[in-house]
Image 1 (tube, rainbow, N blue to C red):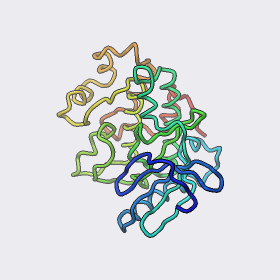
Image 2: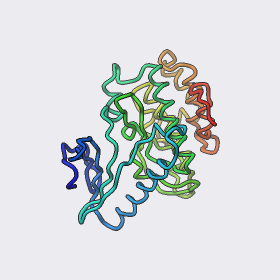
Image 3: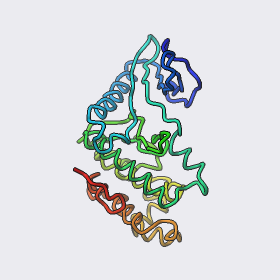
Image 4: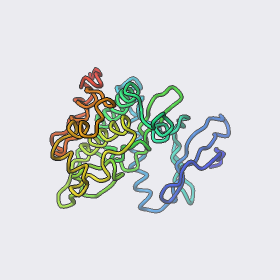
Length: 274
């Protein structure tokens, strides 16, 4: 850490901290993720670093690359592993949403934010990586209002079928909880993307847990998201094109969830994918 001065602790994480620092020579603000070293942690950090580097080994003009956070450097000392990350001055999307009137986006802002997140996730999936922890807390905003998907601590190569339960409960689809069979990690990201859109538009999670004993999830499973929106009187809040996108993403059967190419070419995003 001799090249950096710690300005403040941004967050406490398992076995470490996320620090706002300043480079002593350039004065540039950076975020440093500092994690206490052990053999298990070092293996996890290596996967996270690999994900960042894989996503950065492409043209800066590539579709979605601008919507993924940047790793600047890594270094270790006797006690800690350090990831030096670009600092995004506007913070994370969770706190940005909480600061908005009614703690939710307008329909226009939600559409813009969702399209940016979808572009970033397209870039991630195109490089055969699944994020596995897509959430408001892991999306950051720069001074230009550009959204950046970050925190690749749970990222994994795809195609991959796994059985472990990881992520944040609000964003997890039902198949994660069935540990008897594996699930497609990339399809988990697509469900999480749908939950993100819902939260941008409403300011609240859709379900506590995607399981049969959750009343909202049970209704969603039986009747679909459009019927739920009608039942809750939200048609004046959620535009029809956004409802159409939610119907595309929030499908219980993961095999029926779309690819990110299909998401981007949906009229709600209307992006050109080459």
